[in-house]
Length: 147
Length: 461
Image 1 (cartoon, rainbow over the protein chains, first blue to last red):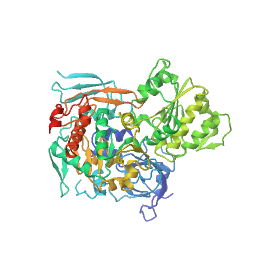
Image 2: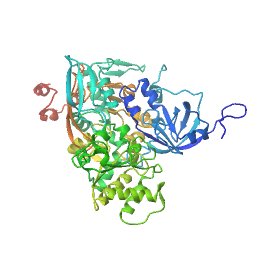
Image 3: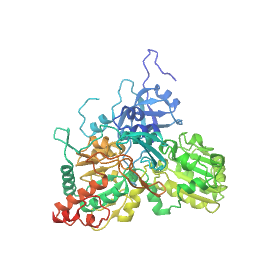
Image 4: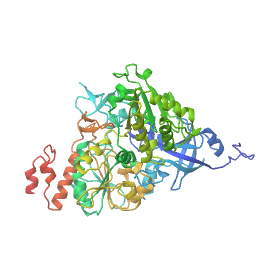
């Protein structure tokens, strides 16, 4: 396992994981302050995965990663897991960032595939996370810029 | 003198705690303290103090900005938009009272809409399994007083229902469970070691998405047959041990959540869970309950089943009778197939909680958001109408996750001029009747109407 090539440049690799998106108390507490509140941004624009998987993909704790699924892509921050994630599994808290990659297929039940869909995760040290408004308004052509 | 209001209901999660105490200022306008609630409920009550809360409807202008308009203008626009649409979709109702759900049903009828609630992206599959296989459930009081084995399958109450474990399921001392946690054995089934799993005596960390196999293995062992050495990533010994614990229970309680309904299998996972509950009743007493997400998300199931015969995904576009077929008449599927031409989002946030492609499809047509606060759905809407907050500045009936109705209080005065969901929907209904030159029969028949107070004025107009 190498985190750096001999010339000191971080090695960029990808890893395929199984994604689940579920509730957390941090998300709930921040949501009730308002979805444009900075707490909501910090609570939900994150991903948790097993440290082994982070090593495999060359991802550092508290650095940004790009998550891509069959239907979308989003930049989130990889944090130390608050609840243990086994190897192979990744978790983004339910909310705006998770729903950029959740497949809308419903197995004819009406309920989208919020949990258990394949994603590719790669380091994105240079990329910035977008705000909730930027993502949602941007997706429908209403984003006018700003913070 | 600030007033302490006791026995207040908390309008956040499905636990619907009704032991909250709120200290309000003497002018009844500000919440000063919140006692007993979890962090989420506390934040919710304090958010009502926010001076930036919207007080007037806002309509999107051609340049993309939002402009404040009056309530009559907003009601007129909403009524006309709903009548012009061939098949509007009215979605939400996770966070409002039953009075509002009842009133919106008349608008849905009048406009030939599809009426759906948050269960469609949450416990909808559980409904499908209940239709197929029954629902041997009980109340949370029975769980607290009797259950000595509690199973959390694909749910994480420490995060999603923070006081569930202390009020009903793990810690409280009940009538037959007077030693509280000491007397209860907790089993957690979750692919992650969640904070609920950490409290469990047995944690089955299954391979994500293999719930159906594991339920089946439980049933197979229970019926006395052999199973493979490993099922869904769980060793045979652990499965056998868990089944023995459940079998020897005096009262076994199974709580299940999004881990079963959001993943592969959907309703079939719940179907197997209900069958397991039935099988366990051959040995001991066992009950099962869905961990409903919001304080009144069981409400639309009750109210609309009573009105239309179906709890969710109710297609009223035929004009003669209600029709329900999830997969066809469910919000996300309708959106993805572009089958609706107007979207009304009430007391929920489709902007944040639908997959983004579904939001993009819905946004092609008029998009109306009815919500007390700013959220993602209000910030992309063509019209945002603020209302009072049910459980904070508007009282009402709510159904807890075990389908027990509770009367919630209002603790502060509502913002002046801002209607409740019920009043707003009655006003829209009245306007739709005016526009279609029909009799507002619903308002005439409604004995406890808050709007309009003088029905003869409506009839004469």
